[in-house]
Length: 253
Image 1 (cartoon, one colour):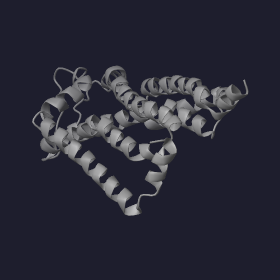
Image 2 (tube, rainbow, N blue to C red):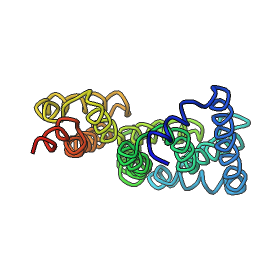
Image 3 (cartoon, one colour):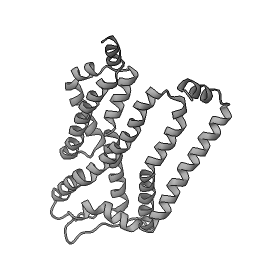
Image 4 (cartoon, rainbow, N blue to C red):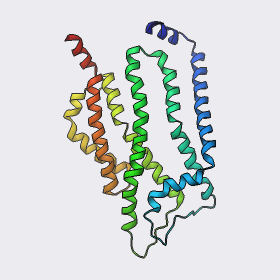
């Protein structure tokens, strides 16, 4: 079946057929998250200990994490397990999105969109890993060392989870910058060479975003801003490969 025939078949399907297919794929995504959650729930406490390790390593020997709410010892690991289940199911969820939209794409479009799907997954996970293994040890070492001597550092487990989830999302989404640049370049909304000329403004914007998305300390702001800028440069490089202008020039050549 040619691309035109495949697209005609996709566009001529009744609206109800598209809605039913969308519902079925959403249900599959929910089932995938639920299955992963059931498998991980028995290890929810161990998962929380793993996620909280960057802070616990830098706590004074006489301090520990605490739970200020009655239900926190149960609800906090529960919340973490649910969020991790969603993160773990993300490849399957994005595959369902791809399977839903792929019939409406031309073969040429699929060659661009499919790598973007896989790259977005890898970059999001890469952002989370960078936050956990690089950023967390540095900022928690800083936070636990600058407090007054007579103040005991005893972080609430729920507050810690909210804090690290915010950073996970901030770094995960920030690492998607190359995908955004490539998509905008491919659609013709931006021109990569013009973006490259605005590099000084982008560099400043990265630090502004780093200030807004991270705690008020120069370490985490810098550790977010520098990767954002480097990923922007990477997006410009790949954007030049897919921009419509480059394709037109190749045809003329």
